[in-house]
Image 1 (cartoon, helix red, strand yellow):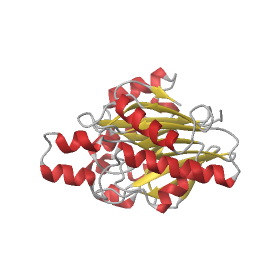
Image 2 (image 1 turned 60 degrees about the horizontal axis):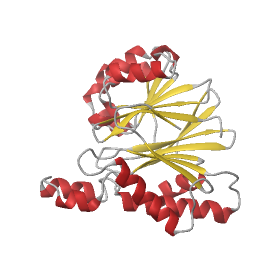
Image 3 (image 1 turned 90 degrees about the vertical axis):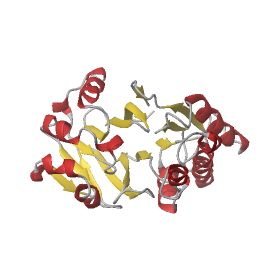
Image 4 (image 1 turned 135 degrees about the vertical axis):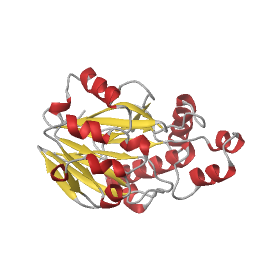
Length: 270
């Protein structure tokens, strides 16, 4: 178990927010829940908004940026890091002090305390969406949700990561048979939409097998499935589907990986 820890305050298609910490440096990733809930989540981790040293936002959709105005104001010692496209396509950033905003693009790196934070591109119908990898002393924690396909750039981060928060948004059969409008189904299933449980399992398998082949892996990969659709998935379905795909490729829980699902409303730590 490394220094880098992540706590999901809540994660689903309705809202997402995470705390990343090495025990000294404390960061927020996405603020798509109410400010009240985010502050409650911080308190559950024995933290307050004043303890946060950086706020990272992946893209401008409400389930990731809902409370940026209130949280930026409350986190008085933190800068806000996000892409130029996110800032320009979300009027909420007009209420964040210009001196508090820092633009970050894919493959850029910043350092806060002992943690290096690297941005990487996602494939989503937002203006300039990015995922983030948090790196300290050779250990890497990567967060990749809201992507319709798994690019080589994302696979590279998955392969390097000792811990991953990764999207398993929907079970395709539930989505196809559900009552969503056809256009919305096509958006979710498209290359700028969201990952299904099966696609998630295949991508995680590819990354884990690459890690094993490299011969550099000394411990199991910790995986947290996140951003589950409230209507088109269940935690049990996501867990079982992904676990089965990993097992079919001779990857074993407790040896090659550990697997859990981020709760929609409650704190989930890894």
